[in-house]
Length: 430
Ligand SMILES: Cc1cc2nc3c(=O)[nH]c(=O)nc-3n(C[C@H](O)[C@H](O)[C@H](O)COP(=O)(O)OP(=O)(O)OC[C@H]3O[C@@H](n4cnc5c(N)ncnc54)[C@H](O)[C@@H]3O)c2cc1C
View 1: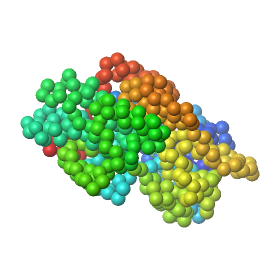
View 2: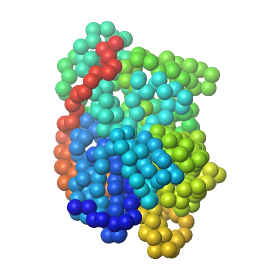
View 3: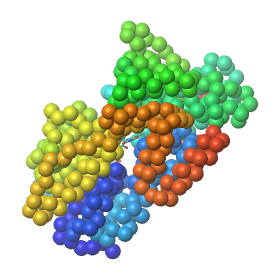
View 4: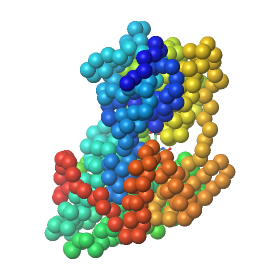
């Protein structure tokens, strides 16, 4: 039963930031309502493993209700926030209204196609379970269609995969695709040699993993090449359709025939951010993030906090913090503490991010990690990556299941979650 307290805290989004805020309020004398359009918390860092058949969706998602079931002051509502009546302190849902005293908006981000929203139909991004299963369908349907294709050129196009964006997501996707093609699939097909699949990783900037130290970019590029991934840096995508992409490098354009393009490039704030900004006269930055003060609150509405991927903290001139889970989680804890401090007529110093370091994996025993000036690559970094990601999964049950799948995969190269499910939105036998 939900405890009854006068102060109503409403949290939009049960991702890393919102869930952390709710958990940090578990002993507080406030009523917490956690609203999400999904009934589960999603561990996005392992989405690429669902997209490439290594894990199943349920391995990386946990029902929100079960995560807060022992938290008597908290209720979970399945609902979509669509707007705000800021003067009356009412959150508008698609099918109702919720009054609040404190509102924490932690609605995350979506993909951004740099002014080409039409590319989304041809090049799915990776943010949701549906995105991951859509990628999975396209990847494995392409191999199936290639097995049946008589025409050499069409078969080659079906066995060409283009990954756009060489940040951690693009690098992880390209590496896992290469491992599928070279190690998991070969003995399963009779006509095609999956090891001949061409995997292109395209990056507009001058290096892969631009957020990491330069030596890590060099190591990652070498590791990708070793896996058989062709990396194209300083190369922009200028056109995508169902059968091809056009790349531009300097003044030269190249058309690549392909049936599968995967998007791992830009992100922008979730759509609800625009409605919140309009209702509160808050500014949005170029990536659609709401500009908030150093306390994560909207300057004109101190009772509304914005955290995580949707927030640009410290004013428009402050450099945005990286869109990573530790930022969202630390902000979730911070705004929970600040809410309680304010109720006790106290205040807190501004939010300060403590960077725990970053890591990215490329493939088996291939990863890079950096914590401050401490840098690691290869097997040790990979083991660190496995450990950190396993421990960061929110439920013990998921940790155990993922550990078992990874162990089995390590021994056999098998990826058992290679299901082609859902609607076939895009023909892959072109
Ligand atoms: C493929 C991928 C790989 C990543 N890898 C890493 C990594 O290795 N390490 C790392 O630190 N970070 C990683 N990140 C980034 C990390 O996942 C994000 O920074 C983090 O999820 C941000 O947390 P958040 O709470 O702001 O948003 P999210 O975790 O995205 O949560 C937002 C929640 O809000 C809900 N929501 C959105 N709109 C509404 C609405 N209108 N009404 C109701 N609910 C709504 C959503 O359903 C969702 O549950 C990765 C992200 C992706 C996509």
